[in-house]
Picture 1: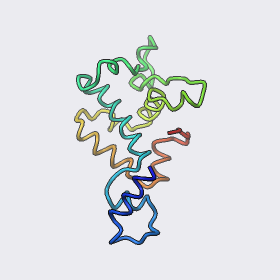
Picture 2: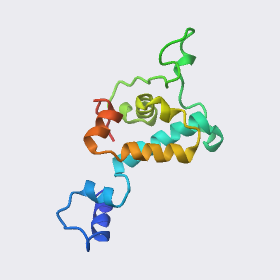
Picture 3: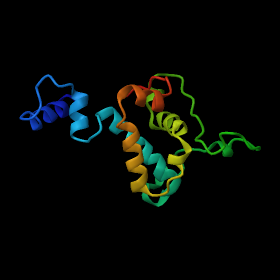
Picture 4: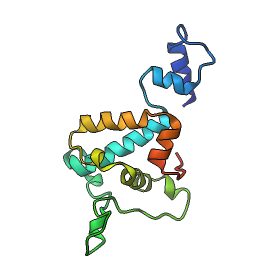
Length: 146
């Protein structure tokens, strides 16, 4: 991450003061920060799980479980991913745990987009929000470790 920040500073050195915050450099380059890129990739994996299973390696075709597989009756969150429980902070860093939390907190209008490119642009626009709004929206007040 430090190397990426230095590369941004070098690439933009002639136009921007050297004391510019790194977050502003990412916005000027129209790119995501490393933690946001990590979240983006996890959400794209889950999008492919729902809408484009043929684009996933075989191991991921049954990696996530939906809530309706665990209940015999209709529930409010039947279309969400089943929340994986973990006992350690190590488990909370897994793709299965973080992915289910992040996907379940997305609005339904983004979850139902079938086009991969449209989904990517929507997710980038959400992750490109200022840090406070994005943390409140994506993390839902929970701290996820990277």
